[in-house]
Image 1: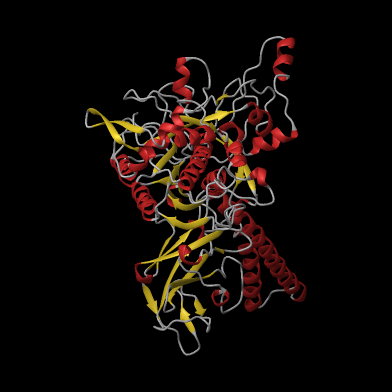
Image 2: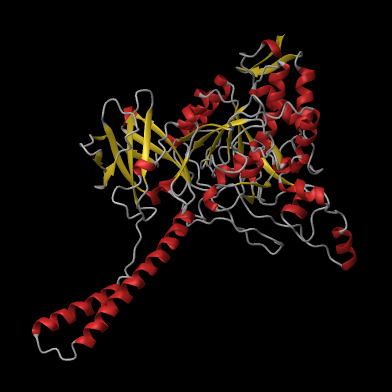
Length: 611
């Protein structure tokens, strides 16, 4: 199985950096890279007059600044939606293979035509699973014993025909990111310190009162009492040094209401509630997200949303949380819809998504082979049109491995279009990562920066006079001689992030951002193809995208950086519209064969995908 890398934010150090934006960091920074990086500005020109001419080469206006926050003009998405407002991604379903998408994040509730934005939320890693195989029954007073040993009161309005309650528990920090855990720990430590200081003050008060009352300690009993009071003060003062917050334990209860499996959580320990009955009875029960599309929030302190999925006849409860803001940001670039702030809409605001969490919270967001395979299965079962995967790592063997074989099957047999980031290891050659830059069935995306993005979103001192590839965007060729990068798309945006970050949006940049930008653009094209009755094929779409790009750079070797060039949504759609009746010629089985039938009649045909 080809194992991909955990994406972490990549820092760069070079003398030509004019501005950078630090994001998240990881202890595995030297060997694992997230497909998000920092902006390197263009190097300064020599001489004052030359500098002045460069600075005057691009003028940032209010409209160009706002547009740079969510780039659409660069790939023609704004022109396309203006001409075809009904082809804004409607009817298109995208699978987001990433760190998880927060259903509570801004812009990810509904589509532009009022449909639910997120169809399903899945944890393909199993990192949020709780063993709920233990079954208990309530006593006469309506109490059950939770898996943590805490007595829990059952809400009498909950329907449970069998009377059987599945119980389990989990440390809540196992569901949180390191950043969120640190914030919650800090807040809990602050409250603990306040209570501890109150306890110390109370103990000192009793000690002082005792000393005032008993000036002479001739009685051995009084000596022991005084020693006990002093020991209490000393213990309270010392326990702050040994403070260790392992995190609150949440109890989970699962039952079948006669129709569906439901789950409820007791978050009393997380909210420092001193009530004897806990908070289970006050919880609004949830079922599998795809059924009712509801989510919960653990507490006001963490502001972390979660969804539930029940498996194995109630014996496993999956609590799905994200393992970084990355996945939500990616989903926002591709599909976010803000009715009151249309400039911040994603590329395809009418598209729907399913969230397939492939980043394992137990491994610091690293993905596993099992998680990737489960995600592919989910994408096929949901009949997705597109897959976006902004994950990857270097590989010794390009276009090889179990995962690549399964991707080939998903693309060639089930006709899904797979888009992935090319990597952030440039500017050296042969740095494209797997699977985006090294797999023949996947469209690998490089990161492009326009003058407006450089001046507006990144605030560089001297923006480039023309658009260019980010210097850290990975380059080809691959070890087997392929170009590596297929296309380029804007590699930065201000997009939604999870609620637990306590922010609505965040600026990130990298090929992780270029990939969903391209994916959203393809969603626009597919939306139009479906509306026009043009059969959707991963091969015809890819051919249209590669044949309608705008070149970035004039030199032949620029192809290794930019692929075929900057994708153009409107031109790709026109290409497909005009060529829908043309015969198809493909390379298959080592022979060149001309197909007499038209593309429209070949929805089930096996087209060739040239690398």
